[in-house]
Length: 74
Image 1 (cartoon, one colour):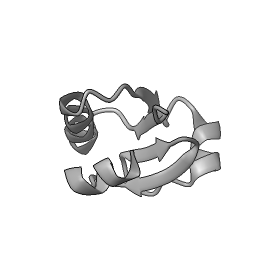
Image 2 (image 1 turned 90 degrees about the horizontal axis):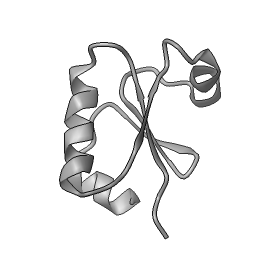
Image 3 (image 1 turned 180 degrees about the horizontal axis):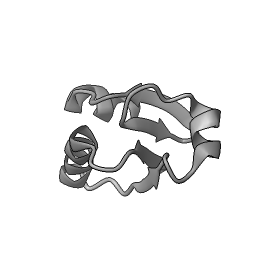
């Protein structure tokens, strides 16, 4: 089963770009959600630092995980 991955991002977030690059290298599809334009998502997941990484509906990471940590969750 493929994981549903969402990246909760803010405008100009360089860490978000690093996570996107990691996922691209792993050939994992993801959805980018700008939390400044979607406050309901922010309320749901309580992200304190960008990026928030949601996998299958669960907030798994805040900030940039290592590639190994990310692989384990996928």
